[in-house]
Length: 309
Image 1: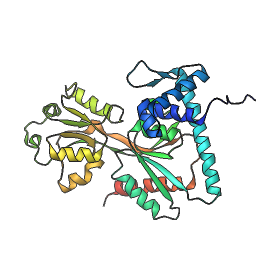
Image 2 (image 1 turned 60 degrees about the vertical axis):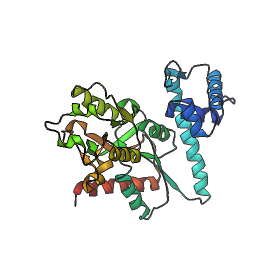
Image 3 (image 1 turned 120 degrees about the vertical axis):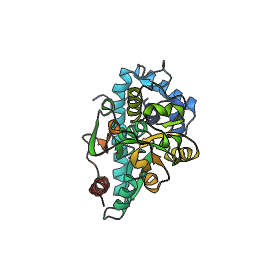
């Protein structure tokens, strides 16, 4: 059996996976606690060892080449297996178990906090690590084994290779505004009217960005002149309350604010914005009993919420 090339080090794989998952060398360097030149050097060394280019550097955002996409599958599997091996030894030594959960903004203020609380009150309670961020970041962590599951909107089909999705419920977007926003008193309100105001929208890599763009195009709005991209719920809420901004956001994120009257939803038909919410895990991998318990808690919270008061 051929041995692995001894020149390939763990740092090569870590730099490769972080650069792909975060879309850039600088972002990968910040995540790894390294300098940008150090990450660039590791990537160059890895490409030299393999004899192929792993990234297409002709674009603003780094993209994998065909060779890079092929290598990614095996690099993710290798890192995941290594982590599982380390965790097995840690558990055998009596260290506390940890369940690692990725929470997209859609569920970070509603389903996930309740699910974690329910899990910690159960017999399999253990340490929980909650990671937040945009979908590409979390799915990259999931593939690499750095987290055990992701809760949120269904990713696009092209990024679901090697992953599996369990549908739990569907949810629309809303256009949230401050309670005295001018559009709330507008007659014959249409989606096109938001062009006259600042708009808080998800970044281009976010799952719901495509839904937002499709709705706007259908309303005859090719672009928004004053667009602010953000995945921060706290910033979105603060900016919406401070200004005349219109916030394109999943309903559950602002459900409490809408119920209390702190924010209002523009009275527009948002039927076309419904999206599937659920649990994404690695396909073909057997999860630990503690992870299964947290997943069961997520399901229980959704069932309770869907049943109503």
